[in-house]
Length: 85
Image 1 (cartoon, helix red, strand yellow):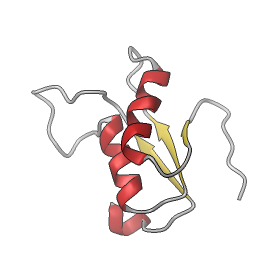
Image 2: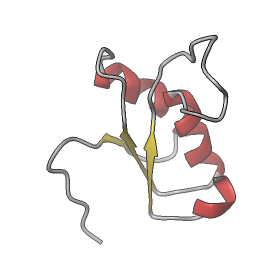
Image 3: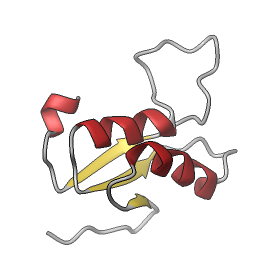
């Protein structure tokens, strides 16, 4: 994924979990920290998180991604979100 989005202005990434359940396959869904790490490694300008598990606090998920992304804004995709070019 990092090579695919290298240098993009915006990475729209799922961030299903804060911690991966032990029974979950590694290639099914990412944690918020993994989404942030991928965005940082790809040197994207902004990170927008989607597909957050409904029982999680979205602000806590955003903060977890922000800790690993570090270089730009981390936003939450919510119904009705639009992104201007």
